[in-house]
Image (cartoon, rainbow, N blue to C red; front, side, top):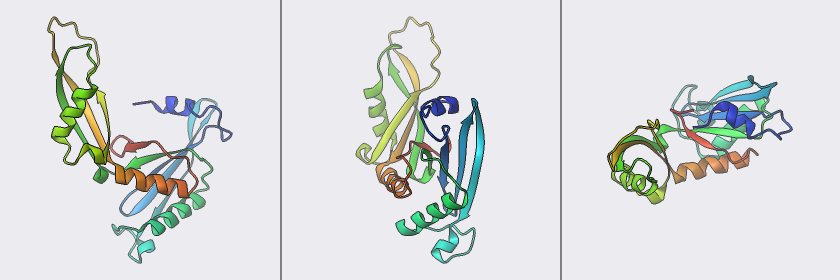
Length: 188
């Protein structure tokens, strides 16, 4: 995973002094923070939260499901009220649309294990791999001297439902933010 400093370096030509907004749409509220790199220091420039209950004629704090129009309206409101100026976004993908697990893959210490990870993912992800965007990272990357031809290599496998990615991509385009990179909320 990239560090926050690496992330900001990607926006070095931004006219907004490298501002980025992080957005978390939960079941009862939308939360956001805007961060900016000022003289090499990551600074919180604004934040906001809006309760979703009133958008569905429910009580504040209620866990609700909004339709696309209500969700768009709520996001526009919190961006406006928080005075967000960033056009670059990072989105926290809810765990309900994600799957994360560890797996062991037996392979040569120097071998490319991409294909083996996909095979292992098919065993543990409860839906078709065609319905998810799959990513993985090898854990414990330190060099180990071994005379074995194959070793068990630990990988972290993460999958996000494509339908959820498309839903949030459409939402971000509606409010004029760049199509955001996503992170599963437990990593955000």
